[in-house]
Length: 81
Image (cartoon, rainbow, N blue to C red):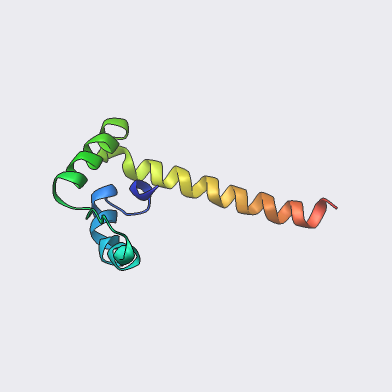
C-alpha cells in the first residue's frame, strides 16, 4: 500500500512516484494524474482509516512483520524438507 511506503503517507507517495507512473502509463488512453482533487480524495479516505499521526507506528509494525516473515522463511528453508 502506498500509504505505508512513504514516510509521510499517500500524498508523498503520489508526489514521489507520479512522474514514473505517468511514464509507465503514457500509452494508456485515459490517464488520470495523481494530483489535485484526486489525491485530496484518496488521502482523505486513507486518513479516515489511519490518521497521519499513527502512520509511522503502522510503518514500523509492517516492517517488523516483514522482518519476522523473512526470519521464518529462512528458518523454514533450512529446517523443513
